[in-house]
Length: 229
Image 1 (tube, rainbow, N blue to C red):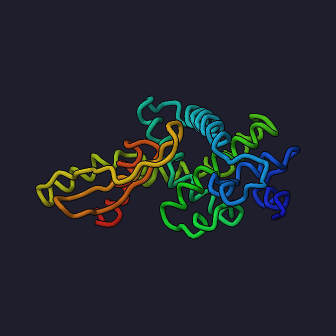
Image 2: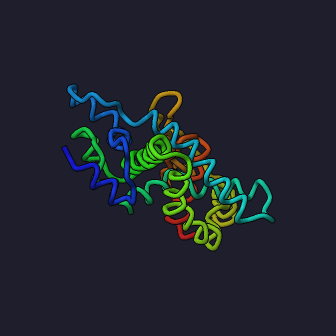
């Protein structure tokens, strides 16, 4: 078994109950292949961590931008806590090498791995909250997520990507983008959607998210990057 105490230190964390951290790194698929493992997978911790993350980031944005309206703050928050953002934070921390996965899931790359990493990040937040309390969880989020806000604002990454992609597609090609659900996975409380965005019959990009709306926005962002629009 890996040294999870060392893994925690790598993330700048320490746990009184290291089993919570182990659970946060355990994907459901790992238990299917390792029936003797007694701890649970990370979906419950992910559920908790998602709520803690949203509250901490909301408070941060509320205090940082006292002049901004609710709608703009909501867009900022979405840019900070979407699947792509959380996955990149998890990867930067080295979480990719800490995960307990099935042999099949361990081979996944690209967007499928991004979803696993984003879920693990939320689960880690949940584990920290349970073990050390709100202040410790907020400190971890402040160190890993809050610094991204300047790039989000400077690059206007918070803007509605769907509206922007539609505007340019209509201007340059006279076509309205079409979004199609290509995949739907997970239990009701933890759905993950794969959305394709098309111009006529051509698939331009794929997007992923915990709701169809998030996945559509993600697909539009990727499409804007791919087309250089």
